[in-house]
Amino acid sequence: MREIIECVPNFSTSDPRVVEQILNELKTTKNTFLLDYTFDNYYNRLVISFIGDKRSIIEAMLKMAFKAVELIDMRTHKGQHPRIGAVDVVPFIPIKNVTIKDCIRIARKFGRKIAKERGVPVYLYGEAATKPERKDLDWIREGEYERLEELMAKPERKPDFGPAKPHPTAGATITGARKVMAGFNVNLGTSDLKIAKKIAKALHSKKGGLANVKAMAAYIPEKNITQIGMSISDFEATPLYRVFELIKLEAERYNVPVIGSEFCGMAPLKAIVDVASYYLKIDNLAVDRVLEVAIQNATEKGRKFE
Amino acid sequence: MREIIECVPNFSTSDPRVVEQILNELKTTKNTFLLDYTFDNYYNRLVISFIGDKRSIIEAMLKMAFKAVELIDMRTHKGQHPRIGAVDVVPFIPIKNVTIKDCIRIARKFGRKIAKERGVPVYLYGEAATKPERKDLDWIREGEYERLEELMAKPERKPDFGPAKPHPTAGATITGARKVMAGFNVNLGTSDLKIAKKIAKALHSKKGGLANVKAMAAYIPEKNITQIGMSISDFEATPLYRVFELIKLEAERYNVPVIGSEFCGMAPLKAIVDVASYYLKIDNLAVDRVLEVAIQNATEKGRKFE
Image (cartoon, rainbow over all chains, first blue to last red):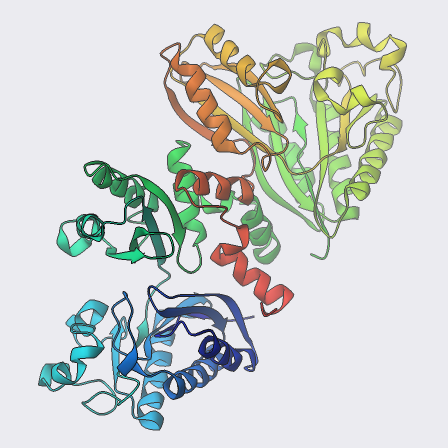
């Protein structure tokens, strides 16, 4: 593909039949490729990662969003992850031969369409935000679905597209453009959500933690443990080993062991390389020292002779 | 490129003018791509990593070998890395749409040519070996260049191609086929080579250390430190974190700190992913969970819908 955009929509469902129908809309759209999808009961949330070109990415995303609006009823939705709608958040991410401006244009187009054709109010966030405070998902999600009607009535919360009140069953949708980020979850060997919340707070950038990190705590009933769920918006500036070691440090004071971690969505190569580089004490291991990357670069861009 | 073979020749030189002339032979061969090269005084050794197809890889390698035979004189060569010739060792490595058998064929062809056209005796090693003991570089390199004439006189050391005595200035050449391996060096905060040798011994597979690991100790005058230089033939079975942590453990008893490490040649992606996965306590992070790999797989092999 000449141009590549990634889209990582988050839908408020973990019902396998609904998941299947949403994925089916993607499957039937040409020039799109599914990278990954995950859903679970405790977040009650479906996260899909797929790629396409400027045209196919909007087409697929609209079809999936229409299906989600049709099938998901927010009035009965419960889950530990903050959310305001059935199609909760839809970021467009530039990967190859595409700029962040292209992605802002795509987000606006997607937002305008879902507002016009389904009556879902839409907020633009991230690089597509129309006001500084709207850059931040947390600001937009304040009060969540439950208080959406009340908060949307305030003039400063008028949506960017669509009516100034929630869609009766689908709530509201947030869309925008951002760079690749890392979704990273760390599991704690405790079922005590109070401790997990303290650790999440210690990590969160706005609460005295690490820059570029948003952290929340969740209880995972299947395993009777808790989890620090994080998004790291700039994993080059704030590498994952720093995040991980700080969690270990904060957990230690409660005698809580860190028992595992996982990527939520795809793992960016640079994030992985920086972790290996830190623990092996390699001074600044460049991504293009990775054999597979060097081979791709050499064959795509021509021989390395300067 | 439809088919990709990697070749990692080791030449016994660190003279920048010789290095340049050898690289120039590669530069002037079509359908080859330089990935990396390193050389240094203490090993007095040049390691080049390049890729090509079945045809170009032999063409480039022969041109480089002829140039090295012409310019390098082993009679005056000194260096800490064991070696028996100017073109010391030439492994061919299957990367894409090529089998190990193809690489054995290529190694034999290369060996036959350099023996016939330059009179350099050639030993086949690794997967191309003609006798079990010849699989092992160490066995072939016994006595090094200095005792080569004496040892080559023994019937069991008759070379696979060429005369049964060393080339007067270029010694002998070893060539063969192998899988991708990791070259990994760990630096110790001591100038005491005796300690470094004990640690190298503790790591070496044949001396009670880790399977798939060959380790040697070297003194690095520029930094006044010592280094454990290793090749790890199967870094999936014996991951790098295990190697690194064992060195730390062995170094501790001498109160020697591990002060850094580096890849010698390219870093295989799987080796990097396994290190990150271990330290972050991620249970079995698959290479295709890496964003860039997933994108390449999706666009090359088609969409991920099963």
